[in-house]
Image (cartoon, rainbow, N blue to C red; front, side, top):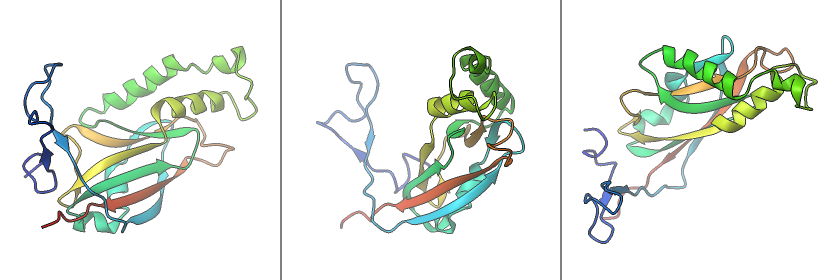
Length: 188
């Protein structure tokens, strides 16, 4: 079963109100997972072929071989760069990728580099890339359930490359630290 029907997700009733409409009109379901200290950490190098948002779900899921044997836990992904970012977004329609890039370029246009940014020595796309990276974020954490990343039907993990060249002319190789934190078995 998937989330909600799986043994790796346990519902907790808070004051007997779980599953009932609260003051906001939304149903409240809280899921608790205890994490054990044993974890697996790997460094993965991802290659973005060009600037833009690139789907990397399979690459990061395969980076830690223990994911497939993990019944429940959390997978944290942290990029080690300041001009690229990680996010979870829709993965079914490839136009989402181009729309995301277009939206980010409107939010933080490169012309700002000439207008008011002071950090301009690495090129016209560098400081805008730092701002985009800050807006999107340097890490994501996704649940693992029954040996798989438990994303929604239309969700995928993206590496967002915000530079035309990945910094100092070195290409688009980006290091991501992947850490799996398995959950503890429930006490009997």
